[in-house]
Length: 154
Image 1 (tube, one colour):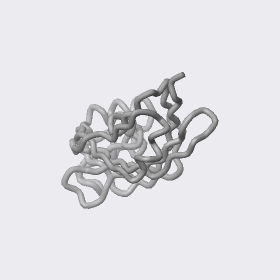
Image 2 (cartoon, rainbow, N blue to C red):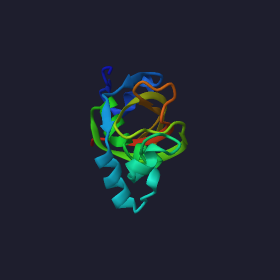
Image 3 (cartoon, rainbow, N blue to C red):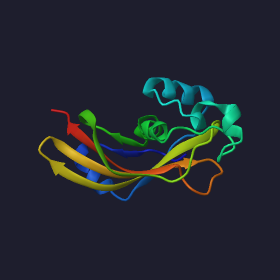
């Protein structure tokens, strides 16, 4: 874990481009996977049937790719702190690639790099590349190019 990227205002985000931060580990346990399956109604056996999954391609159940993606706010939101902000909004994703499955019980964390900051009518649109790492794995779970809008306080 590294210190978060801190700036005093949205206007200072351009000066932070190129900076990186890494967050804390989070365990993705079977209970979380099961809860996600219930919410999304995606009960595929590779996610929710530990007995069958034990003899499947991954040797255990794995998190849904979209579960791993949905953890971005939890994993990455504390990595960038912008003062003087009235509101910060998820602006979307430009690209997402799922690179490795997250086994049940694995720990994941986000590493983010600020890749661009553009002043727009309502504030500053920040682009970041977020990599969700799996503890002990050679490949990350996913890499996403994210966008957020920081609206300055009046």
